[in-house]
Image (cartoon, rainbow, N blue to C red; front, side, top):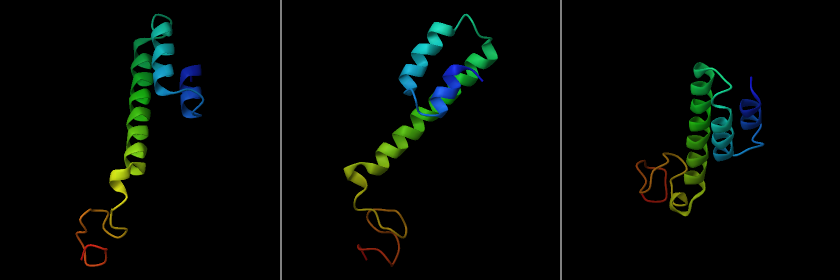
Length: 79
């Protein structure tokens, strides 16, 4: 594994920093690993975006049972 992969997995660098570092190393690594690192960066960005959406204000009213707002089951606050 390269230093970018290790630091990205340990959350020591942000995905944007990882992308900048990858651009600097683009000519020093083979194309397969370049694409693999790019995929890891994209996965991390998507995971961070998902966590942000879960914590945003818009999700505060979600039903704890079905996960929808308005509630789609008989157990939530919007029966």
